[in-house]
Amino acid sequence: MEMDFDLLPELLGYHLRRAQVAVFNDFMRSMAEFQITPGQFGILVLIGANEGLSQSALARAVGVERSTMVSVMDNLERRGLVARRPSPADRRSYALELTARGRALLAELKPRVREHEARIARRLGGRDPAELIELLRRIAG
Amino acid sequence: MEMDFDLLPELLGYHLRRAQVAVFNDFMRSMAEFQITPGQFGILVLIGANEGLSQSALARAVGVERSTMVSVMDNLERRGLVARRPSPADRRSYALELTARGRALLAELKPRVREHEARIARRLGGRDPAELIELLRRIAG
DNA sequence: TATTGTTATACTCTATAACTATA
DNA sequence: TATAGTTATAGAGTATAACAATA
Image 1 (cartoon, rainbow over the protein chains, first blue to last red):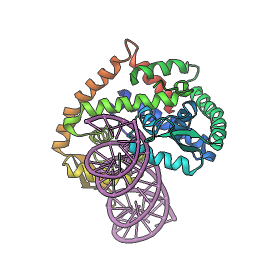
Image 2: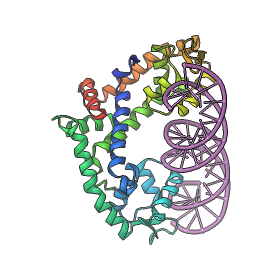
Image 3: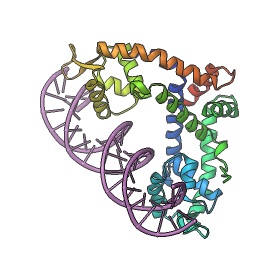
């Protein structure tokens, strides 16, 4: 069954989507034993690097509604990776922190993510990954 | 509020995701009057270029389960863009076709999508979009 | 008045499992 | 036995609108 893809292979958006799916799948396979998604990894990284930030600030950084962040945090808190501490400055908000377990997990994940990235970069067959990142950065604006 | 993104900006997956969201958003803005998603556009293109293909073949081409394709087709059929004809060769399957309205819509969409692509390519500031496509193709494998 | 976290609700996308009718 | 389309069901992920507490 020879499928005709017409103009799709000429479209940047088409290849962007396919590459993103491929990278997502490799990430999920790599981290299978930790049951963590790229999005959850990103959130652990952001909390780890900005301890004390609020849920709203985190939601803004990730680009989702703060109502969406509630269940994301519920999930990570239930797994004992993140803690919602009372903010000393503002009684409306939480100061988010990684728990000891969250820090330990993040320390394990980071080298795995580097390996995953190296494996992806190898697909470029010698081309500089920094080159691709530069082009993507321009697209993202 | 200076956010520290730690290692995220070094990760291909991170930029891939951001670029994909940016392109998706531009597509949706461009096609707002037609209420069409990139995925739906791709399906119209595939049916238009391969009239008579079955739902299962279409699902395989797009990379989703055939059960997922059912509601996608229900939607496009309800909008009068696609028709499920009985397959002459196999009474289990449909032969999918664009309706006259579907063909007319696709003909309107294609130049819009080209414009959208050109707008995205302009963000590359002189860099060849074909270069980016080549790199993405390698990533997608 | 505006913001923070929350809930209720809904919609999309996706999958698995089981069913039927055909092959 | 295997495949095509369907249904029922479930789980992410997302959003909007409204609310109480606090700023």
